[in-house]
Length: 201
Image (cartoon, one colour):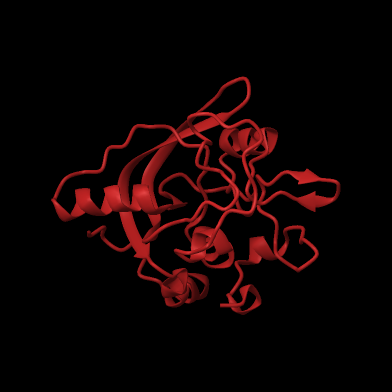
């Protein structure tokens, strides 16, 4: 689906754009006037974490639930836990910060890597480590990503990274192709969404 056909949250509409017209997320670094979509800017990520700003639109997130888009491995683990009636308790940190529900539904559809199972990463992490080893040019997303809502998050800023942990899954919206979320995004933007769906596997 063309990104310009995906309904855009109003705060995302105010973001800077790249040459194609894509809005650039708040935590995306720029180099030589070009956004580096596969990478994360440490300072921007720290500011968002400390001020409770959405990592996509840079606007304040109210106290309460936050959302993020997860890849195949984490989506599968969450789905398996929920299907087995178990809470999902992955305390491993991640570099991906949280955002508004609408912003993450939107991001899941317009980011080509997040949207499709056969999509490949365009960049490699600058200094790969245990948290960024998966950020490799050409790596495939894999089957069944998801937009996931959590009751809350915590973070720690190290010398070079901002690490996030998320608690208590409140919504699990899996997708093979993220276009599956189009109706939910439209309802969220129109204010007619029933809110977070109960998480099921």
